[in-house]
Image 1 (cartoon, one colour):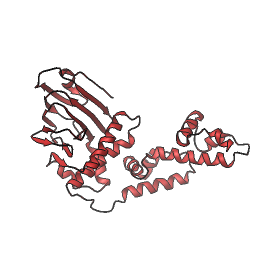
Image 2 (spheres, helix red, strand yellow):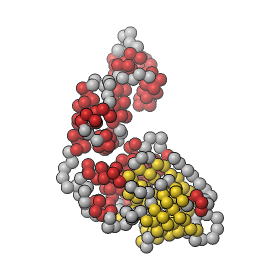
Image 3 (cartoon, one colour):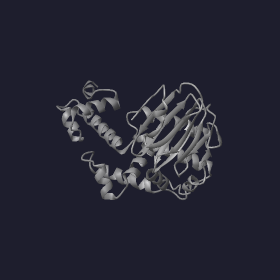
Image 4 (cartoon, one colour):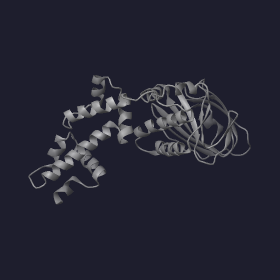
Length: 300
């Protein structure tokens, strides 16, 4: 869900707002204006907020989520829970969920809420077990400006991109890396879970000869968490297993059509052999990847 408001009413910022329980008070006279962009998935919610006036917010951040915040630009400076915030800070909302903040005028932040079990999964497969202890002790972290710039870039993408599967992993991982670096936390040992998951799936995929691949069934049979497999692919290939499988099939189809272009070959037969059962979608995906239609290979 997305929203974008240019003129805000206090009623817009009170009560149950996307799993937030808020009571907002305007402390500065004038018409309250600002931006409130929001996108929610099962595992990650992200808000971009900017207000023209000084306000006080009480209430609770979402239950069962770890909530972080960073400035949305490199110039904002404001006070939050008694801290002087600068663009190199990562703010972490209290685990109790209690929100007690006075927002200065003209501030601009991203608020990132991550499902606890999802973040704990990412912590575990990256062997950053010591980082969770910091979440209960600290509310503010000094972070690397380059990592924060990348998080801001991905946050904008999360708000507006059609597919956010890649970003729902990248944003939490970058936050973890930034905090780990800030707190001098390093992985305890070499990670093998992701490598095992990735290699097991690639071997399985190869054995199918590019057809009848069922990612969910594979994960159930091997007891590999689908989240782990997704993250392993995103880390290595910058894409999900589903996208990788689709791209490999398309490459195989490209090769088969090109090699047999002077024979009596039908594109639909190659498509079906590569497990594409809808010709319209096959042609669309083929053009997306290669910037050419399958029929153009006959002209090569």
